[in-house]
Image (cartoon, rainbow, N blue to C red; front, side, top):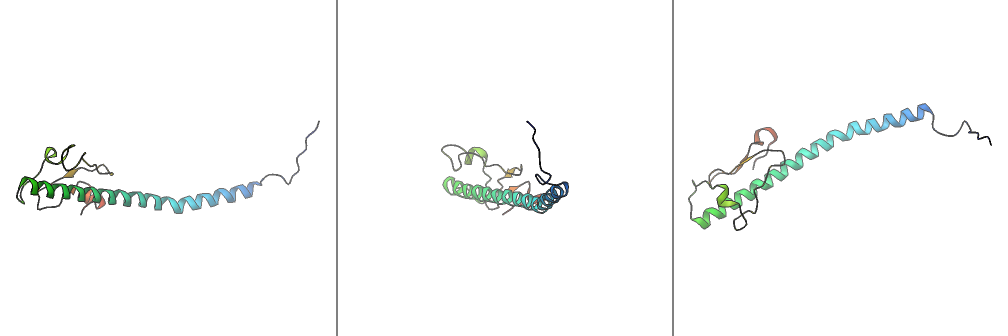
Length: 117
C-alpha cells in the first residue's frame, strides 16, 4: 500500500516564518506591559499593607493610651488577640518599619519602587 501526499498539504517555510515573526512581535509588545502591571500591583499591595499597619498602630495607641511619640513593637500589634493576626510582608521583599504613632509606617522599597503612603 503506497501513501502519497499532495504538495498542497501543510505549511510552507515562508508561512511558518511569518507566523513565528508575528508571535515574536506580539510578545515584544506585551511583555513590558506584564512587567509593569506586576510592579504596579506589588506597589498597591504594599501601600495597602502600610495602611493596615498605620490603622493597627493608631488603634493600639488609643487602647494603650500612648502618646504620638510611642513606637509599637511586633508584640504590641501582631497576634491572635491583637490588632493584626500576622505581620504583613511586602510583595517586593521589602521590610516594614512602624515608626512613631504620629508618623506613617515605611517600607524599605519606598526609594526604589515608590512603596509609600
